[in-house]
Amino acid sequence: MLTVRDLSVRYGAIQAVRGIDLDIANGEIVALIGANGAGKTTVARAIAGLLPYQGTIAFEKDTLRPNSAERNLRRGIALVPEGRGILGSMSVEENLLMGLYTRADKAQGLSDLAAMLERFPILGERRHVLANLLSGGEQQMLAIARALLSKPRLLLLDEPSLGLAPKMTAAVFQMIQELRREGLTVLLVEQKARQTLKIADRAYLMETGRVVTSGPAEALIGDPVVSETFLGGRVTNAG
Ligand code: ATP
Image (cartoon, rainbow, N blue to C red):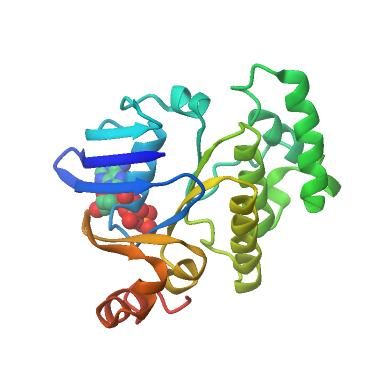
């Protein structure tokens, strides 16, 4: 579904991503794991079309262009950014309405929005509440629900567990598995390596802008070198 080849991104003098390859097949949960500053967010933002980059990113045989976020969203790639990107001074419902802006089928969109409020009852109950009054976990659910309203086929989730209590993180991870069962393909960017590997099919482990290891998630959990570097506390203890 998605093919990334020799992707490099720089911010001025800083080379944030150095020639990485990554593939995502239809229906997979693929994890991108690494410590702070490894370059994970940069990869997700490049795929979403939010950055200039070098290399090739192809989505279902079409080569994507850098800096083409709206076009990528219309093609079916939605990003839930780190920090969620919801607008706190707008209501839950208004935030969800923003998820419809690329949709041509507005009437169907509104009925999808109503269905979303049923699917996430906490959002339904609080639809008129300002988004910044929601808890962190509720805000993450809102950000995911908003992204889903653009009807993506590939969902990019950038550190959805950031700042969440363990119980809420578990709920978000369970939601990700449910979405995959419904046919969605997911790129999950995370620092919580162990928990992420438990729900992912495959993973790419990043350090200082490069992919250092990749493979089936199950094999990576059992790999002693991976365990030492990514699961032993350097990335996180929370997984
Ligand atoms: P985090 O978990 O902190 O988001 P990350 O693995 O997602 O980390 P990136 O955010 O992609 O890492 O950052 C990769 C590198 O690029 C880091 O060295 C970071 O300081 C740098 N960087 C990121 N954004 C910018 C920017 N807008 N301008 C300059 N440098 C940046």
